[in-house]
Length: 73
Image 1 (cartoon, rainbow, N blue to C red):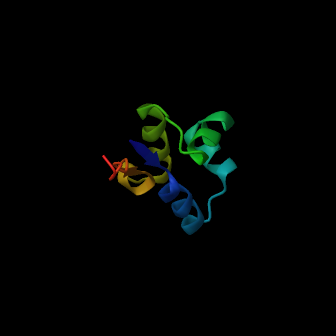
Image 2 (cartoon, rainbow, N blue to C red; image 1 turned 120 degrees about the vertical axis):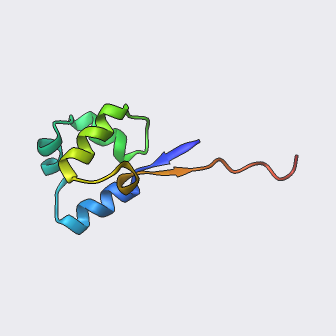
């Protein structure tokens, strides 16, 4: 299972918001922003803070990427 935050960064571009602006608006730290950029696991309270700052829903900033099954088995 994998979560991608590409939608978040597309949304930031569309709204003309810099990463540093989002950090200030949402109260998230630089290391947390780095986790988002690397599609690493973040807690749901972080998702809530980002959604509140951007006035959006979780599906607007993240996407579930299912694991690819090995077809050789």
